[in-house]
Every structure is written in C-alpha cells, then in structure tokens.
Image 1 (cartoon, rainbow, N blue to C red):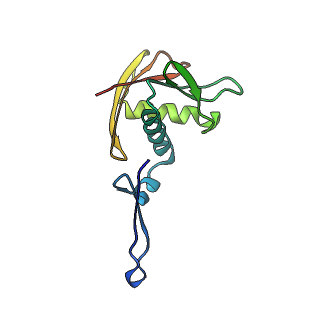
Image 2 (cartoon, rainbow, N blue to C red):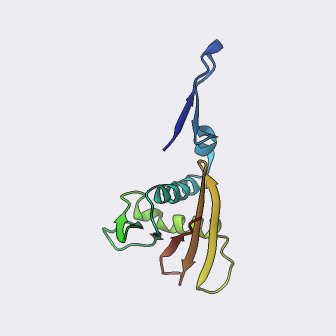
Length: 136
C-alpha cells in the first residue's frame, strides 16, 4: 500500500494526504459501501486472489471470502449485516441488467492507481456474487 504525505506548513495550511495519487478526502467522501467494495477488490488483487465471493452467509461465517493459491480465506469485516448492500454495489459496478437470473457483468475500474478487473456472476437472488479476477 502506497501512501504519499505532502505537508503544507507555510501559513498554517492543512496537511494534505494522498492515497495512490488520489486525495484521501475524495476517497472519504465516497459512499461508504462503494468504498468498502473497492477496497475489498483492491486488497484481493494485492493478495493475488483468483476468486472472490460475497454472499449472505450462514451464522458465524464471513460474508466475504477470497481464494489465494487454492485456499479460501474469510474477511473478518464487514459484518454479515452489510452483505446485501455490498452485493448490490458489486452488481451496480458490474452494470448488471435488470431481468432474470443468472446475471453476469464485468468490473473494470481504477482505484488507487490500480486497475481492478473482475468478471462477476450471480446465479440467483439467493446466491452469492462470485467474482473471478481478470488478469492482464
């Protein structure tokens, strides 16, 4: 993770913090659910994940899991109570068309100087959103 700190001390100007070339204040002003989804996608790519699943989990299971080198890992946060909001944001980012399931789409956005590319599938309204990383 790259943080760039630029200090403007002259005449008491405030400290400006950059995250990957983007002002942190811009990231913080984004919708928190969108920011969370983008951070999950970004961190999953940084960890070399090949797949990601976001779903309505059973009690005690994390709503977000990602696969690295054939092994699934669960995210401790966010909580299961946000799963439906996270799924809705993934569907929005993937530009899912309204209509019957199954649904598919692509996420191709830049976040923190990193191109996030994922193929998104959802078999039914009760199913998890499954994402497969698209490598360059």
